[in-house]
Length: 304
Image 1 (spheres, rainbow, N blue to C red):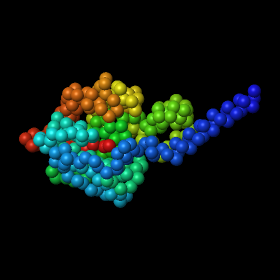
Image 2 (cartoon, helix red, strand yellow):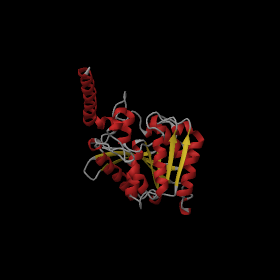
Image 3 (cartoon, rainbow, N blue to C red):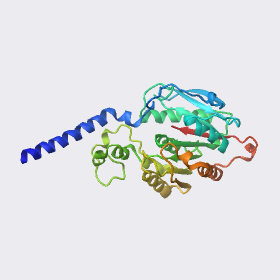
Image 4 (cartoon, one colour):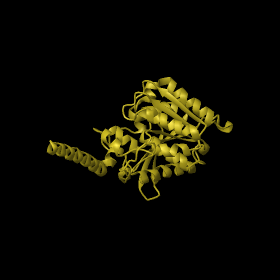
């Protein structure tokens, strides 16, 4: 009997060790997905194909990595839609704003390989580019981020209180450590975020922790939380925890739930309510200057 128990324990231990080894070796492939399954790294559709007026922008991150971005301009006659640009088209029309979309290193046409340290530099390079532009109102830059983009956007907003007017988070996780336990349940005994009640002895192996829960309370700007309750990737409780942490330190916070929203389609499932929510948040927290009212030009930087 003892021998069978030993074999069982060794077997379980071996599985755990193997799982942890795989996590250490391939964690970046779990966190960063530059190419969706079935698609190529190149852009199958550009804003021009969708009749969106845009500018190709090439940047250099502070460590020299060459980055690509789209600055999509407010243009009332855009009609066609596809993939992520469908949301951008509607965002431009409903919110009357410009949209700056950055491809992190390793994504799209940008060079390099993704990492938390590198992507933080990439987001900063994008913001620094925006504040130097003369064709936008740089006092009204709003950072929008979904999922990983929310983690990136939170860091960018915290680091730039004078450059970012507000932050919008959609279906964002508390940390990669917490998400490890969601994706691979056995890891929750070894890896976890700062809210874990027991010591997490393997947190040190996580190279991209993206601990948004530790950042969110340090943000001074207004924050809008958009949570899809049918999110199949990030448990909605993550957004609730982020809001609770932010609200305890940051009074101008708004939390809105969308009962039918999934991870990527909350904006679609939310319909008119979604866009009215965002519009009201911007009107209350990022008001348009009177001198600029006739031009109707807003600015929105999207982290993705």
